[in-house]
Amino acid sequence: MPMSYRLREATLPVLPPGHEAIRVLHFSDLHLTPNRTVEISDIKSFAALEPDLIISTGDFLAHKEAVPVVLDSLKELLNIPGVFVFGSNDYYAPKPKNPFTYLLKDHGRRVLGELLPVEELRSGIVTRGWKDLNHHRATLKIKESVIEFRGTDDAHLERDDYSKVAGPAAECDLAVGVTHAPYLRIIEAMSRDQLDVIFAGHTHGGQVRLPWPGGSKALTTNCDLPNWRARGVSRIAGEPWLNVSAGMGTSPFARIRVASPPEVSLITLESSL
Image (cartoon, rainbow, N blue to C red):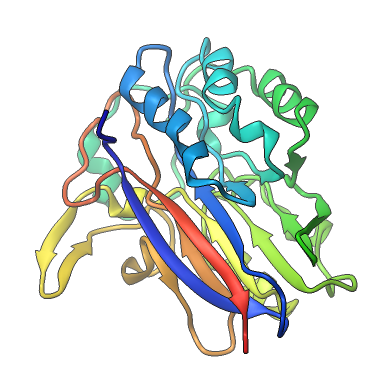
C-alpha cells in the first residue's frame, strides 16, 4: 500500500574519521487519535527503513485514549535504540480554536484542553528501552560511535530548563541535543555547549506554505525560529546542525496541511573525512 508521507533524507558529516555511518530515523508530531488508521499504518511502516537509531521529538498524543495506540504503532520501532522528549500535546488534549491563529504572532497565550495520561506514555516507552531525555542526559553506543544525548521538556509551554542538562559533553564521539519546540533560547544554549547536532519538531513545517521559487515558503514556525528553518536540515555558522521534522500529524481540529505534507526524516550521520 502506498504511504501518505514524505521521506526527507539528508547526510551530515559529523562522525569521527573512519566511523561507520549511522542511519537516524527522526519523527515528530504524530498527534495520534484512535481513529487515525492511515497514519497508524504509516508509522508501522517506518521499521522498513531499517534505522540504527530513532529520535522522537514529541507530540505523540492528541486524545486521552491514544496511549495504547501510540505504543502499538511504535511496537517494532521500540526494538531499536531510541530517545525521546515530550511536546505540549502530550500533556494537554487539543481544544477547538480558530485555525488561523496558528499563523499569527505567538504572544504566549495557550488554549489547553484536558490533561492527558503522559506518565502512562512515558512508562510504556521507557519500559521498552528508549531513553527519556526530558531534562536528562543519556549515552548510547551505536555501532562503534559513542553518542551523548541531552534534552529539554517542552519550550512551547515554558516547561524547559536547560540548566538541568547544561555543560560540556562527556567524552563521546558525537553530542546531540533533542527538544520539541526549537526556540532560539534552546538552540543558543546548546550552541554554547558545542553540541554537534540538534533535533526538533513542533513546526509542522509551517503547516501552511506558499509557493515560492525553488519550492515553498513557511508562513510561521509557531515559535521564534526563523521561518526559513521551518523544516529539514539547516545550519548557521558557529552553531550545531539543526534538523526540524515537519511531523506526521496535526491537531484534530486543524487537519489541513498546505504544501507541507506529513513527513519523517532519515538522517545519515557519516564520517567527516
